[in-house]
Amino acid sequence: MVNESGQLMRLSFWSALLVLAMVFGCSGAAARRASVEITAWQVEWEQYHEAETDDRFEAALAGYQSMCERRPPYPRACYDRSRLLFALERDSQAVERSLDFVRRFADHALAPTAIKRLARHYAGGDAIDQGIRTLSGLTVELDETPVCDSILYQLAWLQRHDGRTVDEGASLAALLARHDRWESQLWDDAIWRLIEIRQQQSAVEEQYRLLHQLLETRESSWLIGSYTSPHHDDALLMLGKLLHRERRDEEAIAALMELAELPSSRLRDEGLFFAAQVRFDQGRERDGCLLLKRLIDEMEGASMRRRALAESTINNCEL
Image (cartoon, rainbow, N blue to C red; front, side):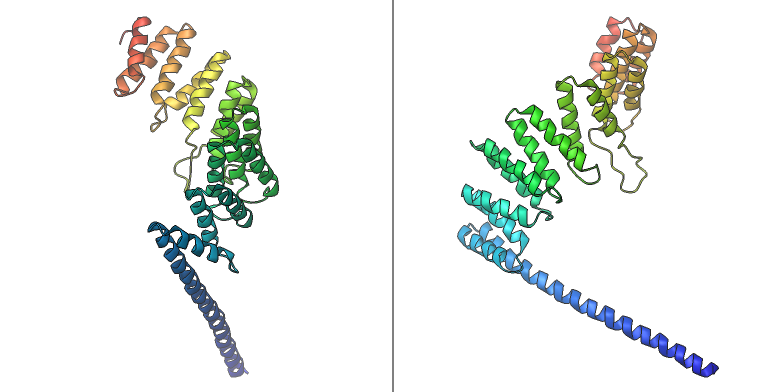
């Protein structure tokens, strides 16, 4: 019985290995076939791209058209068809093909670029109203797709270009409502622009809310893949100045000194300078002078150093 059991176990083991080999062998063969297929498409596309590079535009356009219309289509060729049509100034066709590409391949990596090119086209002529209507419609049509954030962002850009600040703010707010920071590469620029709009509108409470929302995204540099917004330091400086205008001076000092203590920040000197201004406004001249002295001593090449020297003279600081 023991021998029979052992033989059964060995048979089961080798049978399992055989099944795994068959599965992975088939998968490997399928992967190799897919790789050959992709390579063949790439080689064909490169022929048409080379034709474009050699200024044989009609041959390139025909090639892109052929690859785009076959089943299944080659998405990159569809993108290049619309791009080349714009370059050849066949604008009506280019717009039509660009919209077709975005609708069919909303999850493609080049869809945001196609949307941006459309927005620049609309802004460059007399069709900005048409562009705003078109992109507004796309935000509804492609609401649940990966390219929706780019559509909203470029719609906001068109509205800004046309002086429609209220509409621009609404488009940016919609982007932020639909996508969090990790869902959109446009989140940082969108929230910063919306902060600037709220500042222009003197919407102080909304400005506070957005500044804190942006600042809360700061991450520790030791985290793998950590990323801090490029607008983080500007947000700290704006927050400090805003708090000072609201006479919330200790909170202002906290924000400005947090900025001043960031070793890699390009705005450290401004953090120290405006923190000193807060102290002078409070009547705490000694503390203000100490902050100016630190700026002057530690930041020889800083842009604010000359202003700090002038300010220290005005306030009779002993340096």
